[in-house]
Length: 229
Image (cartoon, rainbow, N blue to C red; front, side, top):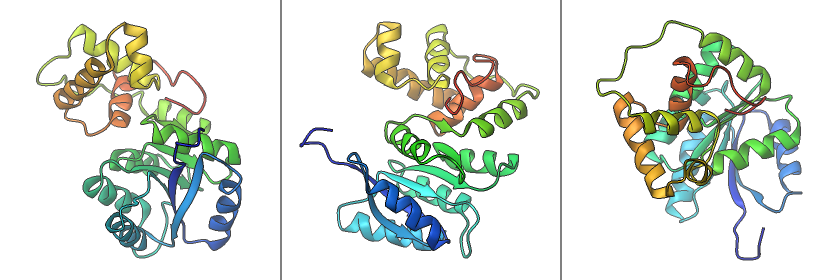
């Protein structure tokens, strides 16, 4: 990280103080990630983001526990993405239940980690979310791939073009816009236009949901790398 670059600003949301202290201690050792603030439940998280946004320094990424009092992590994630869509959310939980995985990703989470993940994995998920890429715990990725072996959904009202299907496959493989542009030999602006068109045609709200659609439709048979899509 150069002197001009600002560390990724993280809001940690968890109702267990010991978890917050452990993650904070690790993040303090990193140059490119900084702990901006903490919250003990979903409602407090929304209030904290609102305050930070008003102060002109909203978080870039929220590490979100899913099971919390007052307002759970899935509901809080949905509220964050509705009000502040530019803020990325990574779910951090002890559970690998399919309904929790799907609930978090459908709410707009960009990643899903288990609390026993290595510290370096947490950092990798934060960096991936900051760059708009999806990062899943390997066990979660396997469970998700299995659950997506289901009947295909109906075709979009307007079919995707061949180029859009290529771009969607790259998105599902976890590629950032710059990588997709280089791979397909088109401009980043063109990639962004294709992604926007894909989301509109499929009625989806995020790259994460588009990646899940691509897996289910067979554009990529399984997550190509453990822990990432």
